[in-house]
Length: 53
Image (cartoon, rainbow, N blue to C red; front, side, top):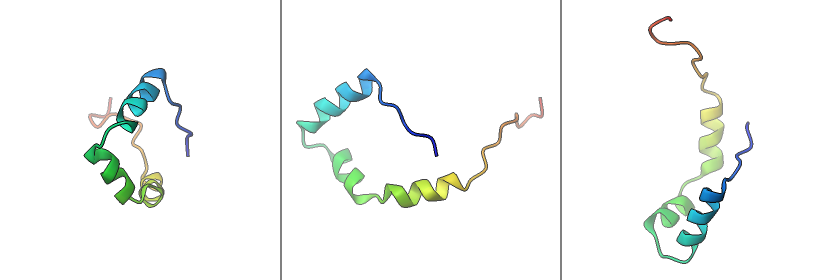
């Protein structure tokens, strides 16, 4: 699995949200991301066009 790289913009957004009560932070805590990532990693990514080009 690829390691994600945070950009300066990602860090700025994270810093701004850290000081606020935001529903997305609550949702993030409820989701088991490791389990979801494990399922997603098993999906084959289609590398060709659906149109066959």
